[in-house]
Length: 365
Length: 254
Image 1 (cartoon, rainbow over the protein chains, first blue to last red):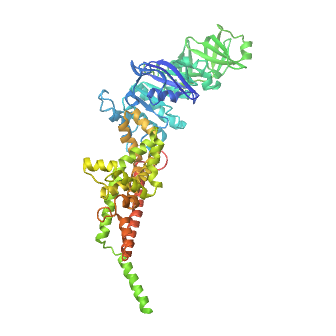
Image 2: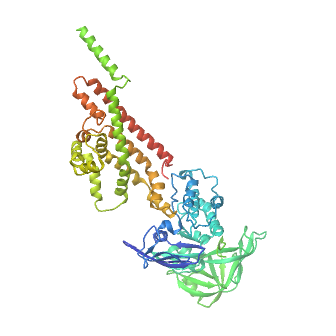
Image 3: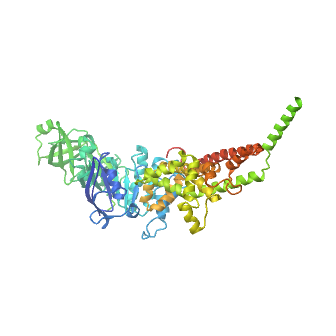
């Protein structure tokens, strides 16, 4: 369990956050640039000083303003992967990796094989004699990740570790982060302003805005939060649903995934039945229909009931539909909402034009 | 007329011959030895202090920082004779520090080789601090933060990250200060005198040679020697710091 309550005032910028989350797991600090994510990460690591609050990790206080307790960063056992890697230029990759290992706490589990296992896990075996400047951006971040993990951290802070990388390099590093989450089960805090990274990695999300934690919860809950729109923008707004593959892909290339009472047919080439997945259904990709739809090219539809409605902007309405557990968000024009007489409690069909599918294995399961 | 010309020509040739004679005379050796002994002591003793002062000036914010900065740099702008005079007042046999040193430790600095080293150290200190300070300013504090999160305490961080990364500057500063120390004149002659074999460094020997009517050849040779040492020292400083920088792995931005 991670309990955080921190405040800090510097000039115009006021940081005031409070959240709790289960460990192990990946806690995403999600928000726009300038929302205070990096400041919060620095405060958690002890690299910056808050004015008041507590940081409590798995029952141990790392910071407590009332008791004047402030464990210095070097004793907090919180690994930090910086945005720019911050590898030591005068060490080789191997030297960088072992820097923290040599300084690991004495009570860390005796596990002499960890460095070599991590080197394999992160695919670094061919890079060991290189210098940091001889590495690509993605390789650098993998080394930084390995270096932080070798300190036996109780918590790993990843401050937008992919922000400096292009899309291809991102895709090169992300699987390694998933492996660390699922195989090493180190609790992580993942700072990001990319919703897709959150979708792939996070088990818990803290939504940040203007230095405040405006919401904290699991991803499906946060995806419905009214203030998420300010961060991701109207176009990227959409419910996230955790679901399970029920049938593997047949010869049409489509498999089945159960969502609430219904099922979606999706291309699931590499997926096995029983595998947990995450689906993001963008509000703009959902169509609402009152009668049973016929003669449409859209294959996927789910029956549901309207549970909430809110104005999105002057011309459109966000409709929340319960499809038998999961709640989906659909955007319809205000005109359509009026014509269809949409109201809370109305049963209807949700037509799904497209879905973003991400495999996801929960590390706490 | 012709014989006078020939005689002059012969004299010039003989003069040049003696100038470039590779056999170094006893008096030249002595000046070289004293110069090296003085410069070496001065550089080695000021090095730790210079690193500490550069650290304080760059990384610490404290009252009197501006004063410290000014005091360190004063020898650059004061007449060297004045610095030597100041040292005499402080470290002379009747000076507050000098008297104490002589009574409690039996150490006398005036007119001795260690005294010459002290005068030289004071004069070359700003050069060293400057070079180290520039190097320290270029060390990315983010790397020290990273080391901190990896479990390194303050001294550990300094020794494993900061010091190696600023080592090219330390080396360059030390060599520059050493070479400058070989040629320090005013403060040395004022505080430590001009005693052959004890405090007579190269420039002091050069000065003495110039005072003697027959000293022109010796003066020329000492001048060439000083010039060669200076050029060689600067070249060495540049070369070594380049080598080190390459070893530290920063060809271009990382």
